[in-house]
Image 1 (tube, rainbow, N blue to C red):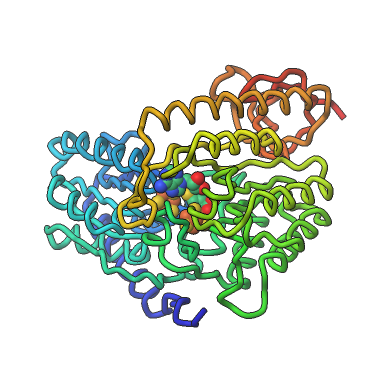
Image 2 (cartoon, rainbow, N blue to C red):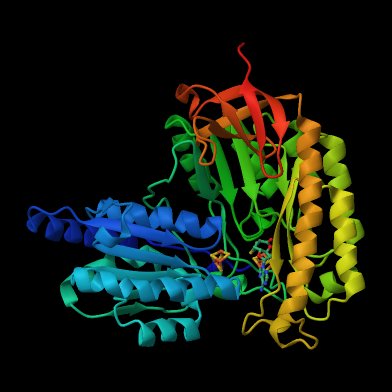
Amino acid sequence: MADRSRIVISDEEIALQDDYARRVLEIQDSRMGHTRTYFIRTYGCQMNEHDSEQLAGYLVDMGYSATDDISKADLIVFNTCCVRDGAEQKVYGHLGVLKRYMAQNPNLIICVCGCMMQQEEAAKTVRARYPHVRVIFGTHNLYKFPQLVYESITGNRRIFELEDNPEGHIAKSPPVVRESGIVAYTTIMYGCNNFCSYCIVPYVRGRERSRDIEDIMRELYSLKESGAKEVMLLGQNVNSYGKDIQGASFADLIKKVDEVGIDRVRFMTSHPKDLSDEVLDVMAGSKHIAHHLHLPVQSGSNRVLEAMNRHYTVDKYLGIIERAKKLMPDIGITTDIIVGFPGETEKEYEETLDLIRTVGYDSAFTFKYSPRKGTPAASMPDQISEEEKTRRITKLIKVQDEITFRIHESLVGTTQKVLTLGKSKHDEGALSGKLERGITINFDGSDALIGEFADVKITKAKHNTLYGAVIDN
Ligand code: SAH
Ligand code: SF4
Ligand code: F3S
């Protein structure tokens, strides 16, 4: 891929944005007696969640502090997703509600950004139907956020920054306010080149760009220093890492990341067509790369996979799973599945059920196919009815639930290393944590364990979680 796909934001541009952030801060300081607060709502995937951490970083630089109460915020950001229609409809619904807050606080700045705003039609709709939205910008313009906030505060006009740039940018070490000090996200790749026939992501996130290895390593060493226990390397297709830059493959990268010494390293998402044997070898031989693979299969039918433009067969996929399990018998495998892709027959759908039984996934994200305007699948013949998609997904979820439960049951009696993430949301008094293979467990133990690893003996299996007790060493 040509070098121009890696437009690293220049030092001048970074300095300019720092300057805008400083100017906003000065304006805030001059408005005595009132601390400005922000609220960010994130839709969609980890990529968006991490972008929101970056937006929060800019906002803190500008003198804002976070609030949990959206009705009290002085600045609200909706970071949107458009991967399925449901995600878009949710955004429209929530935007309508915001009008009320505008009436309470006329100085409120409402910003809408993210993948949905990269689509011309959606951006136009928000512009026309929601006049209380003051700032609209796309994923390619995120690094300009301080400037957009400054212009909104000083200019008293609506701001639209939607310049499309499919080649995208790479921001070098932007400010980040992380949601958790225990588990951190680090982006290693931006964009996607795969153009799966159902998917909007390549259109709204631009082409693949790998982040410089030195930049990634710097961030990881600093995360280690600040006490992070787990890191998730992010990209739409992490296995393509390095294809657009010379010198390092994804296998090379995770080998280096293993040396940093952060206790647990995960990565997502892997694409079966690009997952190399070497990556599995590095995982198996590593100290810190978790034995967990999120490997979306999408369908168990070769015909559907071809129509989806996925570039692998069921046999090739099962070959990867077999090799991974041989090298790492304790590996946890998770996946994404779409039902009701145009033309999917009952027999082809049954093949997906057969596949999930063969693989034995720890869990699966399941989706009803949602036509996305501008993607090839949206205009394919034989679209499946909503009722039929619902029938197919309901049965799929039931089959997968039984598989998940069986795997959970097989773990009862074993002792596992658990990273304690916090208090359980559902079980009062209990802690919640994660096994290396990614399964959530609730267990009794002291709050002092939060952020620490504990040896936990699994005592009980339920459909979505495990229960256990800390073993005293
Ligand atoms: N880059 C990742 C994930 C992309 S989006 C990957 O390639 O696996 C996450 C999941 O959403 C996809 O894996 C797919 O299962 C689902 N998805 C994407 N577009 C969809 C659509 N139009 N309808 C239904 N599900 C979709
Ligand atoms: Fe979408 Fe396919 Fe790219 Fe994943 S690999 S983001 S499903 S186009
Ligand atoms: Fe959604 Fe964009 Fe992620 S479309 S799934 S937020 S890349």
